[in-house]
Structure formats: C-alpha cells, structure tokens
Image (cartoon, rainbow, N blue to C red; front, side, top):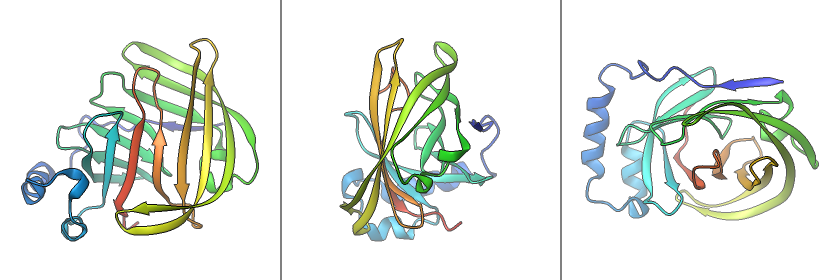
Length: 208
C-alpha cells in the first residue's frame, strides 16, 4: 500500500513568492478566466492550471513548489492543492480539506492501468475530522478520446475511477485524460462527500 500524504503547507511559501504572484495577478486582471489568452498564460513564468469547483467560477492556479513529484498549486485566494501524478492528494483553505490519501502503489500512476481493476483507498479530512475513510475504487480504461484544451485539440487516454463508500452511500466517478507518457492534462475529481466536483485543466505544463 502506498501513502500519498499531505505536505506541510504552513511555511511552504517561497521567499518573494506572494509578491510575484500579486504581480502575475495584475497581469491577468480584467480577464474572465475562461478567456485568458494563451499568450498571457505562456508569458507567466510559472506552470499553471485552470480549476473550477462545482458551479463556481473558473480560476487560474500557479505552481508554488515541487517536491518528491508532489506539486503544490496556489490560487489567488490562498487555496492550496497538492497534486501527485494528476491526482489531488491534499488541500488547504477549503471548508472540508483532504488531509491525506492512501492508495495502492500499483495505481499511483494511472498509466499502469490496462484493464478493469478494483482497489481500496483511504482518505482523511479535517472538518469534520475523519481518518482513513475506506473507499472501494474500480478503475476502467475507456480508450482514446479527442479533447479540446487551451493548448489545442489532443487525443488522450481516458481513465475512470468509480469510487464507492457504502456507509455514506457516496458513489462518484472521477475522470482523467492522460497522454501516452502518463501526464494528466485534464481531470474531473471528487475528493470529499462535502465538496462538489473539482475540474482541472493544465494550461502550462511544469518543466520537470
């Protein structure tokens, strides 16, 4: 069983980062996030993603740090998402934060999935405090799909995670669009029974 635990985000901001982020925010001020021109995003000296939570507005997050393949993304309103191999493994700043995720090492990377398989995940949260909530997860490879992204149309492999917690009656479907190298360009993820779906699209890929 592999552990995808959270990072300590309390003192994780790089020196000068907040000032830099504010400058970037000014550079894109005035744009609806849906219509931020590609050239503006390309000129930002940080990797970036578009994110939408449920029916809320779409926003731009930039990469704050990268450690042990775990990416820490930050929004303009100081909400953090820790992402590993395209999957959200921890959050900070939401009403119900995912504090840790434990998954089998066989599915840490979704490009290892070639057939329908079933595993168990264990999630922990902070409000209310829940530790190691068990979820039965069925993985399915749904073949190649063409998707339209900010960077243009791409033909990507689609992986589905059907997640079930019988006690809560919580059953959701997570979707990941992945290239042949295993990089997740787009996803729809349900990380908590108390939160709506999180929609993510990579707008500027991390260099490492």
